[in-house]
Picture 1 (spheres, one colour):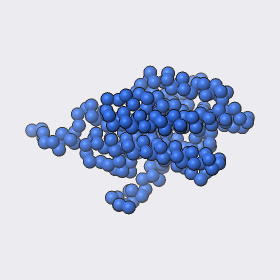
Picture 2 (tube, one colour):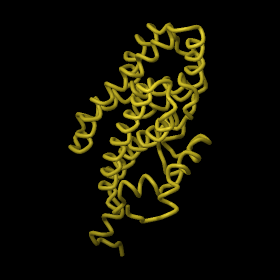
Picture 3 (tube, helix red, strand yellow):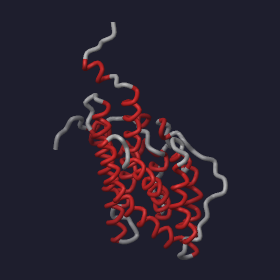
Length: 250
């Protein structure tokens, strides 16, 4: 006989709740992983102002990740906290975009990754701010204000580097060529959003005298838990303390 106790129902949520859990968790993972990546620039950025800006952007992404992870735990109903979801899942359980886990590379690579993702998140938060779920809509409404600043920051650097010296222009061209293969994955769930994204990035690229790559073989799999070789190393560093001392309280 099927167990119809409240606890049993909470452990096996209905499909709409399960789908929402996966969606919220994937957006949380994007921000958590990117926050960890950007933290690698602390004390290593080209100048103090940029160092502080990147650290603040990383903290913004971490704040969004925390809110979404907490909400995902509530939707799942299994008692997992934001810390559990962040620190105790394996690589295959993470569903972030591959773009977010890419190594920082040189400064041009970091700026290009951030620029493409910032435009994506601007479109995403605008859409989700009208979500029927009050919590997700509230997170999106707050996140969109931060995302506007992020996009201004990364856009200004794209123009500055693309229209700068021959060397900075070359590095930006290389970065776009390397990272463009991860673009399509951002829109596999909603191809219509790509047009809005393109309207954001195209004028910036034109001002920076940079062009989109013509045809690049696209990489996917992050949303299904299939990642590049880079995520495992990132998680090993990020989760080392929590896994070494499970349940520790500070």
